[in-house]
Amino acid sequence: MSQGEFAVNFFVALFALIDPIGIVPFFAAGTAGVSGRDRAQIALYISLFALAFLTFFYFTGLGLLAFFGISLPAFRIAGGIILLLVGLDMVRDDPSSKSSDAVDGASAKAKRESVGRRFERMIVPFAMPLLIGPGAISTVIIYASQAKPFGLTGAAIGVGVIAAVSAVTLLAFLLTPLITRLLGRIGLSIVVRVLGLILCAMAVQFILAGFSDATRGLIRHDTAAPYQKTP
Image (cartoon, rainbow, N blue to C red; front, side):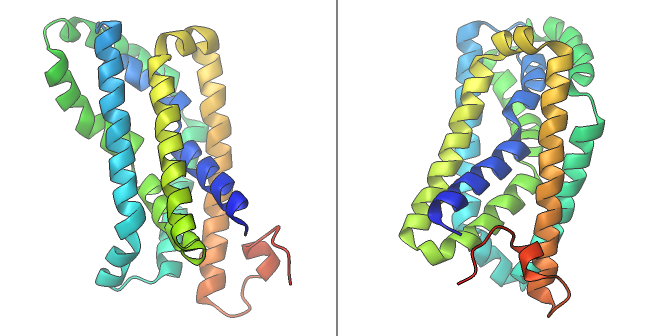
């Protein structure tokens, strides 16, 4: 895998997991009744939190696996299963219908709370479980292992990809009113389902690669690592 292919694959996987477009309804629900300037501040803080947190796991993930005695193939399989479950939820569920009631219920409460308290309320349930879940953390650790052969260049590429996804997330949050109007309920549902399908396919690929690394001859090499040129 070349450095360019690594960057593209990492970006697509992380983008599909974080799913900035699909999270727009939840962000709209959590910031209902907030002014445009305050919404932009909350979006910036959440995006910076995502950047710092994922970068931390990108550089320390392999060390944590070694500390707990977990092999990379085992973690790859576990991460693939988590990604598959997340992808299936994205394919089957309708985020726009989930968020519609939340927006109505949050608007009255938003008028009684300050932006500071709203950010504190959103950072843990919104940024951590929803935006940065186990799937995103697993993906970052897996791709960090794939970046090791590239040395410092791989580390820089990985951080750049995480920063790019965080920037796209920030942009999606800033454009929340516009995206909601343009896509509508049906459009948001389609985007989330397509990203969920891509995520399911990547999850299966992670599982195949994990079994291929942990066994001998069980999984064909061209299935575990497709599109790679053989020397």
